[in-house]
Length: 219
Image (tube, rainbow, N blue to C red):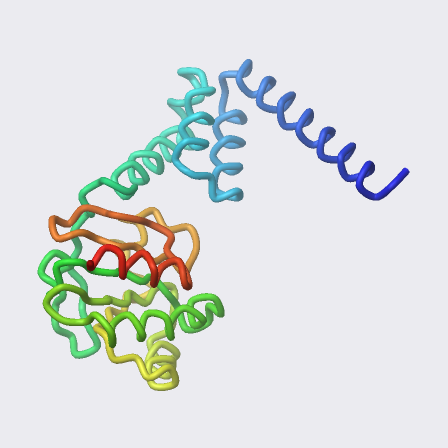
């Protein structure tokens, strides 16, 4: 048998296993079901549609458990931060200790970049963001960096190493009310574009696609 045939067989077996697992969980209204669905959603970084499907497959008992309630909270946060939703506002401090409120940041169209110094893909996007800020920055557009899950000293070293000039917010690791919870961030980088009215235009921008998309919005 060829490698292609073997891979097809393995894929079909995995799909069948997933179907049987979902069927079994849907028929058992208990804590194990709720915990399994919640864990699967987090491990797979499931999107809104898949997370809602998992939640809807739970029975009332499973939904009432802690895992069920946490999954519902996750879905609610995701719904509030999808494209077309009005972005949740937050106030955090910049490098000088000055409070920065998202809704008051200059620029009719804004990019919000959640990143960390240790995150290779985050660092790879910085030249793209600098290019956008250099080309379009002003009254109509601005980039705002939000450093998360990082040590302050490492964050400051990365700023210098990358030559970052656009505004930056540092979110302390022990900040219980940080923006990662508001925006349901499971992984970084996460780059989002906001419209003049605070509406989320697009989530998950990267690379050349991001540059093209921003340029199109600013026409």
